[in-house]
Length: 79
Image 1 (tube, rainbow, N blue to C red):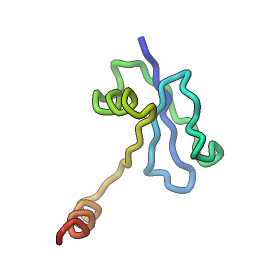
Image 2 (image 1 turned 120 degrees about the vertical axis):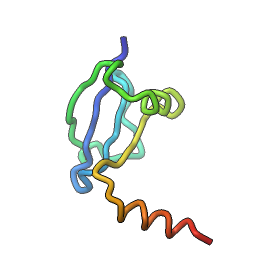
Image 3 (image 1 turned 90 degrees about the vertical axis):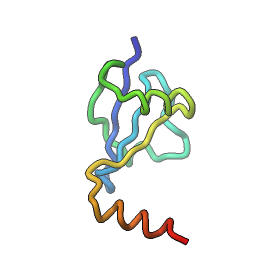
């Protein structure tokens, strides 16, 4: 059974990163910018997160998204 580590970005605390235990921390990131939040068993990790880790070795997401965030992103996508 796989286990995963969740990290929170220190200066942008809504940003999260998830790595499978045993994976090397991404060399393009500064490890001091991230704090370990928790460890989860496979069954407690969303399938989309597991899929992204399988493809890319890491998963990122933003939590605490507001309706305004969605509206702003949608507005930027309009031609």
